[in-house]
Length: 296
Length: 256
Image (tube, rainbow over all chains, first blue to last red; front, side, top):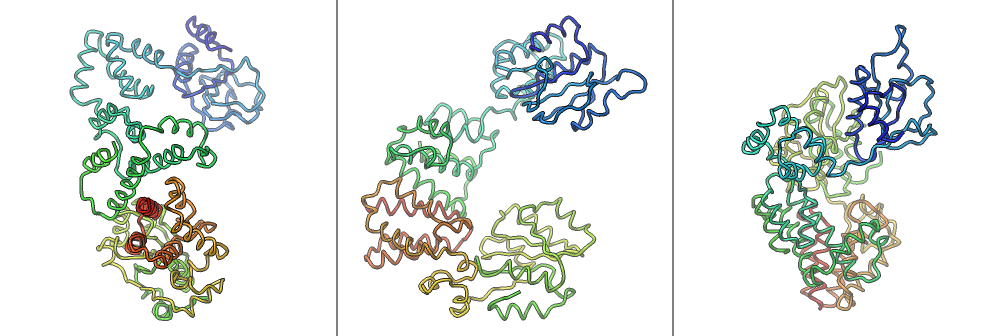
């Protein structure tokens, strides 16, 4: 069944309790939204199953039809379903490895940014688009975190929503949110993306970035760049990385001259020794600044 | 259990009963000297189990151990843990459980918390004699004994590659001035950093390289290699690969 068809049934309150398989591609958020809507229409309580074997006991009710909508969430559906009556049951999975009637499967697409932002707008319809965009960016589009944050605002009246948003922000309610990770930081250094490096520095206290980790990642990546930039015959197999990774690293070649690469590598290996021997008694921020200044 | 050498240590251990054996012992000796072997010997002597908790050390685990009904020896390799984890062990040592004796292993006291060292009975491993080490040498090349001085390391050297290693070192000295940098750096990938015995032993590599520079009377390069040997002897927990790569970079630069 197509997702649009199921959506129509939900909107028109004509969804039935027949067995369904929800196949997701990225995350299960949308599946759970649909399940909640279906359970309300069917007036059934959601009951989460732990294991596929529990499917044997659903609908075995002496007193007629079950009051539960049974949900089983698994990664791969690879066991043949022996039970005949699986009404009032929905299986959520990422892949299907058994033969199943196609009409039972509803494929849920990956949510794209505009869909998530639209969803947020529906929930907090008096927040301006720039605030929605800001919140989306700072959570890296994490729908679960976004829903959590928008729920705090959506309980208020329309007129109060923008005020509450500002109050939460002023009280550092969003201070733990940061779209950057150590990988963003080291990638920005490798790419000589000065703007991003500056941006990340401003948010440094929110990111889980330690000098040891930065050094390890930089050494690994600069070694790949040295190999790819200096060795024309270098291949992904030789470096034991995927072709995709190889191509991504190749795009970063040329940003440093060969001499710069050699000096950077010498600096990083020296720094690693000094850090681990206790010669550098500096704060985390100072150490990281020191690394960046000596490279870029 | 067939143990070669270490008579003093063996006699010391054999003088104890389970009741008199120290609650916490620190076995101190170089990598490959037999710390794990002796740990197993201690557990066997007292008809007990030896449980390695190096990778799982945590406050929760200590709590679990304190309520275990049966006695066991618990082994922690201090060379593999950081300072935070050492603080967890401190708690373990300070509040000894009736059913747990602790065996700590370390190659050096240098990076240990003094609070841990002060609470342990230290058992030192002595240097092995040449005669004792020859029992583990699978080769007639006794030059190796000048560099490798523990049975554990001798046992696992890939003797087939000794000549290849000597040749590699000779090539480094004679051809590094012509080699591209990436090629020089790739030498570090041929060395054994973590028990991958199909690669070259790091200590042997450094020793052969030093010999080459002595023969060519290249003092500057000799000093660079010697400095790495000194650093590794001082603290075995440093990242060997990065130290070697730093050394190779300096050698490459000097020979331009």
